[in-house]
Image (tube, rainbow, N blue to C red; front, side, top):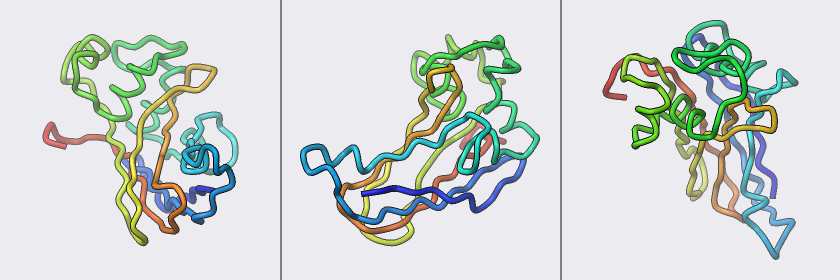
Length: 157
């Protein structure tokens, strides 16, 4: 099965991708491999966080390795930092990573569009320490969904 992503919208505060699952399982021994797509952050062709982001607050988070962001200096970041910045994880790690609630962060979520798929997304890092986004869905099911990555503009998001 292949998951594909196509950029639908890019603003300074939001990225939206259409995620499509073709429902084909190519690896019967491990179908979860076919139900994963990673949106990279390398500055390559779309879909790519760095390429697709419009200049603005979300772009600053995406380019954290090159420029730093808030209390995080430039350089490779950890998965906990990526989750705090891109997934607004407010667990025990986020206060240590971001030091206070006044540092802007983003939220990632997937909304089903067609089919009966279960969707999930998570922030991770690549080999260079750039934040990436992983999207997973139900293996072997045809359908589509929207991945939204948006900068939080209020505390209740």
